[in-house]
Amino acid sequence: MTEKATIRVFIADDHAIVREGLKQILAEQRDIIVAGEAENGLDAIKLFRKAKCHVMLLDISMPDRSGIEVLKQVKKEHPEMAVLMLSMHREDQYAIRSLKAGAAGYLTKQSAPQELVVAIRQVAAGQKYVSAALAQELASQLGDGHDTAPHEALSDREYQTLTMIASGKTVSAIAQELSLSVKTISEYRARLLVKMKLKNSAELTHYAIKNQLIE
Image (cartoon, rainbow, N blue to C red; front, side):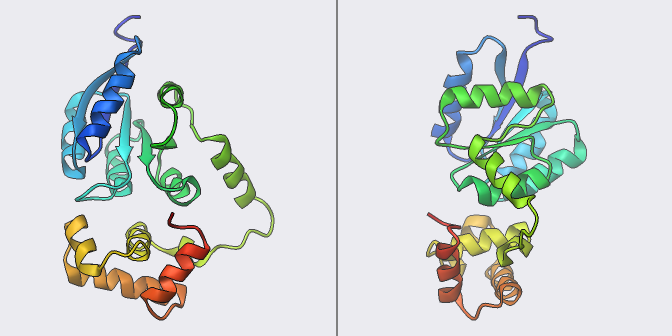
């Protein structure tokens, strides 16, 4: 395998154990090398510029910036960059948002190692990668008569706030985790309640469970 043919991968994930696991998987592939890594969104944006990579593996849940925010910045600077999103979330919820924002593919962290390798090679070749289940979901949404669910009208940050509140986290806890002010998170909460025509966090949680937005 020539150097030109080698796929250079950048890993952005805030969990060291996940990064190490990914590196071990990729170390077994002759055509793939890890060119750099970052543990938060800001570092991902700064360091990937120096890594001269072909594919970025990007965790959708970062402590300082959401993965989708990082994705948008990366694609703005380097439209040709293939970004493969990694997530613990159900595919059909965050995946569609990621793909609309420019991601080349989406994988859950429960995916088999070989699926990760296949996905990296596919997006590095300029193609999209989605699982069979996600492909079916996308196809169904393109069908006639698809009604847009209330949560689909939310911004990425509003949607993130929704899922975190529905998971039982307080506004203060969310603000701390996302490195934002309590006032900012409260504004997100107020806006999403208005958009979804809900009265309080209890109704929001009920909606999220009913629509399988959280586990």
